[in-house]
Amino acid sequence: MDSARIAELLASFLERPLSESQLEYISMYIDILLRWNQKLNLTAVRDPEQVAMRHFGESLFAAQHLFPRVGAGLGPDQAERRSPLRVADVGSGAGFPGLPIKLFVPEVHLTLIESNHKKATFLREVVRLLALADADVFSGRAEELPHGSAEVVTLRAVEQFDSALPVAMHLVAPGGRLALFIGASQASGVPQVAAGFNWSERLVMPLSSQRILLVGRRDR
Image (cartoon, rainbow, N blue to C red; front, side, top):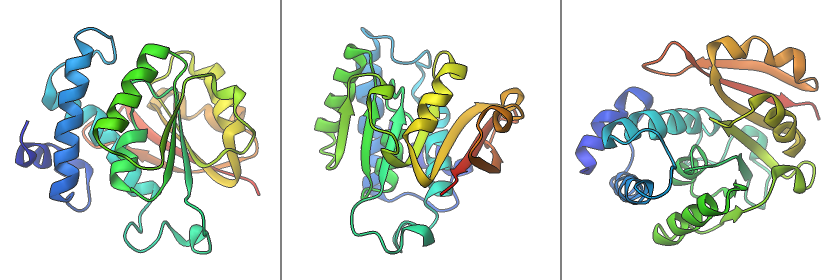
């Protein structure tokens, strides 16, 4: 798919356009994903335009919300940081939202957490082909990582969400954020089971009234 078409498809999700190089990386990523998907069940979405909107659109919508000051630092709470802000994507699967976040904010240090070794191999191949620096793949279980491993943790389209949520919470550093990509019916119950987080940010995904981005900040 050419860059112009990708830009058109993503326009509803973004407040400002992506660069030409970002669009080219997305085009490459879609090609790699659909090629691997023929042998490995990475996504049920097989139409390239739907991949752009459903996977990249949601991921980039979250990225611009989590990192609104791209190009001018990573946000007011990160102004004094000397080391890269750490992002962990739990149950990364085909790489969403972690890899699009990395394309949007190259300066973060990204850890893609995926216990399925075939999917982890795919993720490493994407990282290699896109030549992404400071992007690692952890092919184990998220609960094996230390408490407070990242300032931003993401959780999207994982099986057994109820059991994955406490694991994701465990990884969030004090003052850090947990971004959940969930259905509208799930969102209301999260604050009751996720104590220690302030769940004040709730955004409806563009083009879908049933998909929510819910962001909680961990108490310091």
